[in-house]
Every structure is written in C-alpha cells, then in structure tokens.
Length: 303
Image (cartoon, rainbow, N blue to C red; front, side, top):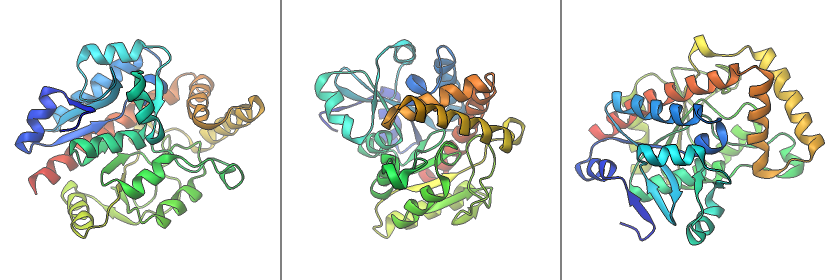
C-alpha cells in the first residue's frame, strides 16, 4: 500500500474485510511509562480493544518502516529499548531514512493511521499549547495534525500540564470538533473536568460515528476530538495535582528543559511526587479510552 508502511497480518486482514481497527500510539511505551509497566499496559490496552470487538494496531517506526501493528516481541523490544526517537510529523522522514527506532506521538500516529486507512485512534491525552506558549510559541504539532488529518482521536482531554484554555482556542480556530463522550466539560487528564466546555455532549458510539461520517462526508478534512473523563475511582484530586504540576513546571523552567523534552520530564516528576498514583491514573484512563475507542470503531465500521 505504501513503500514505507508494513501492516501486521491481523491488521491487514481486518482492514481488507472492513472490520473495525483501533490505532494506538507508542510514545506511551517509550517515553510515558517505565519498564515493565509500559509493556504490560500496552498489552492490556490491546486486550481491551479486542474485548470491545476491534483489532488493535499499535504503531511505531522499526527497521526504516512504519509498522502498523506490533507483535508481542516488538512491544517487549520497544519497551526496553534505549535512545528511542520521539517521532512527530517532522521526524517521520528522518527516522525512516536513518533506520532509527521511533515511537510515534499523537501527530505521527494520526498520519500513520490515515495512511493505513484506520479512522479511529486511541491515546491518553493530546498535546497542546504549553504554559507561557504566548511567549515561547511552544505549541504541540498534535493540534495542527488534528486540523489536517482525518482521524478521530479518543483521549482524556489534553495533558493537564498544558494551558488548556489556549489549547481549546487553537482547536476552535482550526475547526476541530470537540466531543464530550458522556461529559459536558473538557476532561483534564488526571481529573474528570477542567471546567471548560466541549462543543457537544454525545452519549453513544453511534452518535460519534455519525459526526465523523458527516464531517468527512462534507469534505471537511481534519480530525474529530473525542474526550472522555478518567473513571471516577481513579481520578486525582484537582487541587493536589494542580500544585504538583506547578512545582514540576517551575523545576523544568529552572533546569532549562525545552521542546519535546518537557512533557516526558514533567510526567516523570509528577509520578515521583505522587508516589506513583499519577501513573496508576494514567494506566486507568488509557484503558478506559481504549474501551470507548473500540466501541466507536465498531459503530463507524457498521456504517
């Protein structure tokens, strides 16, 4: 299908038959969680997708190719690998041409999913406008990818370390519909609500599938953002996590950490400061997102 794309046989067969497939990113494996939690979580998330009636397709760059669907051995190798390149849109040609091992961000996973013909992608939280972004112009490529690539992204909102109001403003400017799946407000990753509104609340996968079909049927390129809150039992206290994020952001500023190194640093420090509780929340929300994403993929495939 493409000189640079290889499909796992299970994924290939599902796409050929029109069965539902859910794309999954790989930076959560290489940069988001420590080993062996990362590999265990990746396998459990794939199991959740299968239990929901869809085929999982974890995406990474291996051996100079975009791999859509990873074997258990691939997951294990990626989870233990060192010096894995964090791959966004700008990095894709470099990682492929150099043969580097690369883990795909939200933006790169959207591109790869679209190349493979997969309309639904599940992640933890999207990137966005960083704090003081009006000064630094540090805005995640995830937002511009949502503006141009026609994939539905299921997430627990944007990462809480970001400037959420400005993130929503950029999404609005680019015409990206923000759906609250079972919620009237935009989730804040570790917590269930940011207090900011979504464009529409929908409570069924079939309703989400209709929005996807209508958007793309109208010739409106770009993504659909489907946000769903972390399960209440695993949500963190808003004030507690807010204070920890502020401490971690100040520490990153003092250390001069910039660009794509900021998010991994902050997530790592938040895990340390919460005694691992934020990691448990992260795992829980990703699994929940996978459950919702599988249901949407099934509903969209049924159309």
